[in-house]
Image (cartoon, rainbow, N blue to C red; front, side, top):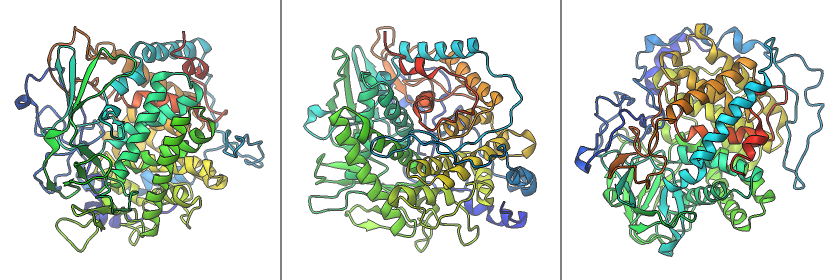
Length: 603
């Protein structure tokens, strides 16, 4: 394992503190109806945890949407654990049991050659008794009941917003942050909220739910809600690239915008519930600004949606979710029987690949456009000669050669199908990870998701040795995270073990063999989430029991409240990817009946 001196860690700590600086908290607090716009709490609300880096420059726009519900940031370099304690012997140990030849397995493929089984054996020693079948059944039944009672994917679509086909413009849906839902009788208007921010990281929740809808669609193609979310959310990925096309003469349609807000206030229909009156408004975002992490401006002649307000400078935060969606799109393209979904998936994948090639071909820089539609390399607002690390996957390579290796590897695999000489070994153990996680808790999500999606893309592109090494690294990282003696900075956060459960679940979808203890942890945090959700009264915003008023996307408004033992409502969908993934490791502990989950909405 690579080691890095603690002195250098301290020197670099300040430089990496702001890595995730474009994200902001969606932690809901009290269950409340906001009576009018003026009462909407802003980011200085003392009841909302402050996750912002204290060194982040102030801008004219409110603090944006951190997508973790974390508390205070860890801002003291002295809190960083000793490097040997954190990243020592555990990362040098082979945690998998010895195999004569781990690749001596039969690999099942689709007719088109996509892998449909794990191409290697990888086991872990585990002396614990398996989870009894009755406990597996009880857990499965609880999850199935929740998904069915809520009609989860239809609920996701009903509370999302975008552009409806009724406008005559290309349609799509996004799971927004920084929105409010205004209830007026049978009319619910989903409105962009300037008081909350500009929803810079909407691809994260949208991507999480989309990943699960895509995989679930292949398991349950007749489910209307799953299919609708798969189509509409995939269309939103297309919109976020084509939306940053300046005019009819602009041929560059592959750069990623943070978001777009077309000047279209309109009614949005709900196919399965036409009686529900739903409207969408973006007008509070029809203002320009320049910030350290993003600018917003008007493209008056946007060729697809007409006048459109564009927020530029897509940062690295959301890329792993884009990549994870892209990893499953080839399966949709080959296997779905829905021709419309196939066409949408084909277009989305082609655009994403073009976007990732742009990153690789431009020295790992995430390029963008300005208000005049010109391609730009984002620059630091305080230092015009510097590229901010939010726009680069190689900022710290000169100081830490293996920093952000997983991010570059995943980008290369998606763009070109090869590694482009990015040798990440086990994908963990870099000094960069410790520095970044110590600087801001949200960096764990970025680091972990790039590691997972690098493993997934290595599997889907046939780089089996690379995938094997990366999955071994997911085991090592997971064991370190679970060890309270590792002094991992995450242990300072109340939601750390909840997030470990999600890390384990999403890693298991790409080959990590779960131990019984880990499987029980996944069960426990799902069940504690369901217990909290049982008291949430607004799964149907149109129900007469929901009082008229303005409801935030946080604070138990039109989404249920998350907490240290309660998953965010987008994360609760992650069982679908696990159950539908062809890369589940048969050596892992069993904790859910995936056949029952697949059929959750069938009578």
